Image 1 (cartoon, one colour):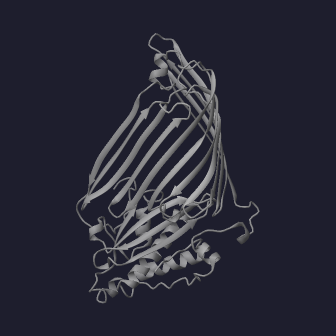
Image 2 (image 1 turned 45 degrees about the vertical axis):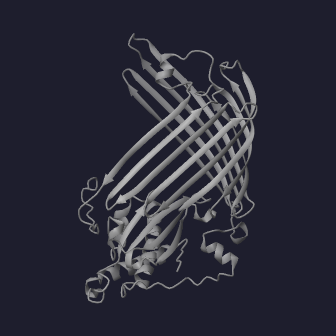
Image 3 (image 1 turned 90 degrees about the vertical axis):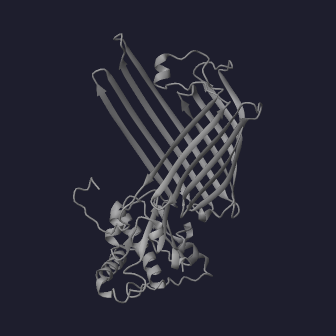
Length: 442
């Protein structure tokens, strides 16, 4: 059974959560009825991303289950993922998978928050949807007397109802004065001062986007101004003042279930890469091997783009160019998966200039978070890039200050990184108790 909810009203949300709390309060009186399956469903909550650190909130609001810290001790494994909606809110996807005796159970729930929701409104909606999903599991798995959930009863033959069930609306379904356009403006700045050092930063950005089930439009503009001043050992002062700006657009159209085409363009100024003005215009195509609806759980895509790039340099490059136009192409293969054993992602990108394929860049990046055994998790991340395409490098020598402060990109044949670690947790398998005193500590 699939339970999906979108836009729960505050009244219905408060009522249902109150019902769940009341039912949870009668748990002790029902122990005799639940002896065959335990006092309450044991839940392992698996989440990595937005609103995942609010476990205390969820445990408080859904007090009628037992939260455990290891998957093997649970009756149901819940994976929560999320992604941004076209309006600027978030869509949360919940996968409920039975464990052990309940291994045949599988269900899914969805919840969409509004971009104007406060944090508590968003968390209330997430907790409500999570609670209803757990209630469905409890009802169907023999934990009787706790909760009851009825299906929504949407007609599968009605495309509009099916779309609404997934949280998808079209312009003709709603009266929207903005025609699904969403705008955002951001600005921030800071000043850090010491007796021998001062830095100032100012950044602004603007975004306009429109997302439907077939079109995705995004336009972005940004401006950054940075100034640094240092007193050196010889009492002279080093001052670096620069600004960068950029404008980009992304237009995507879904031509088939697994195919999308689009157009990407950029224009801007990049001081660190010796580009006073640069711009590109790239048609692109993407193929998704899995349905796009499964992107938060598993995704395998191939993305190809090709087009001209124009660069006007501050200083003459190593190749003796003051400005130039080159054709470039790039292919990216990306895989990501989130399963009960952990998370994995791999990204491979190859790019090259059309006039000379020896000037290219190949990069590989991967991350793995693997649950080895009870309480033991292994985390590994690595990346490697073979760099052969730095045509923008300045022909002159860099100063020591530019090298140390990384104010200019330096020539290199490769870039690589490695990070790894593990975590091990042991002790009591239960973590139902919530104590909010001294909230900064555990």
